[in-house]
Length: 255
Image 1 (tube, one colour):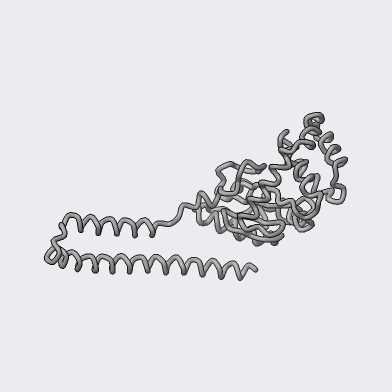
Image 2 (image 1 turned 180 degrees about the horizontal axis):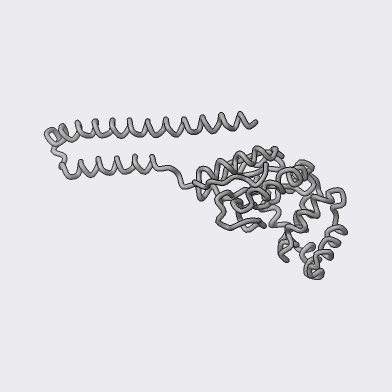
């Protein structure tokens, strides 16, 4: 998998160089053709020289705009929404996870990748959690229960409790976790019975589907999709590459 990703990166770099070279060729050809046209048109068709020079300038400007690298800010923050996150708002690496609390592979990611990734790269990552609650009929109520905790500033405590006790998920468990974390129990119970949290879960799922998520867990690392509970080294490779692109010289605390 790692070798495959490295090959993809090399192919992408080659593609960029090829497009840059092609842009140069197009510009040269355009200049040559329009130069000939300038000389011929003025003498044969009476086109005003100033107008023709304006046409040339406009064409060259459009080509230059097309050659500019795309701003990656929209890709980086495009799926952040207003969901719970850890890390700095403007962190150079944004990871968006689409997950389901009943998903065993999501639990594996939580145990084997999520924790060490934040331990090693937490200062450079904004980690966003979004719901893709489609695995079981109870997936949506579980996600809504965590959203109700988020409303009281306790999402990540529920996130840990849910994955640590995946076999216990259910309304009684949600109420117990809320009590353990000293939430306003009346407000929490009311939230569980309200459609607002359910609607938020549904919106997350729709956003994930439109973005190309087909199963859980699904991730976007600065807009680059990554599917499944990939091993830690894959995330490390992607994060390190993004830091390198941002000009940040950083070595993780541990491997």
